[in-house]
Amino acid sequence: MNRILKLIPLLLIILSGSLSAKPLHELTLMDERQVTELWSYLETLEDVSGSLSVEAASDNQRWRNMANSTRSLGFTKNPHWFRFSVINNTGVTNWELHIDH
Image 1 (spheres, helix red, strand yellow):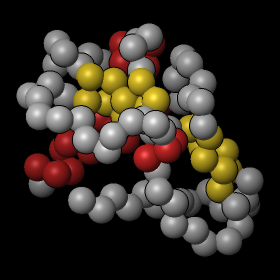
Image 2: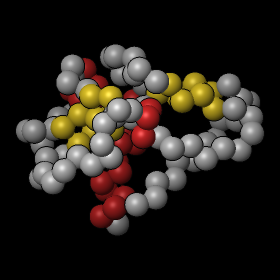
Image 3: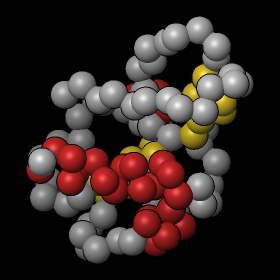
């Protein structure tokens, strides 16, 4: 249950559709089934106040592209927001996001 609560901010920002800045890389979905490593598409924002709303996070200018960074954010008590951009070149409208940890 705790894991699901931690994913809610990620899902909200993905679904919000009001992202102000276009990410450097966009994930393009194709007709064939695919497993994709999202790291090179991700952007992250550290919420140092721990109180950003979806709107405040999406409008924030401190988003950092993760494509060329280490796969660790270190140890912090601060929440991190994540986002990525998707282009759907298929007729499929029901995609699933699976996160291994």
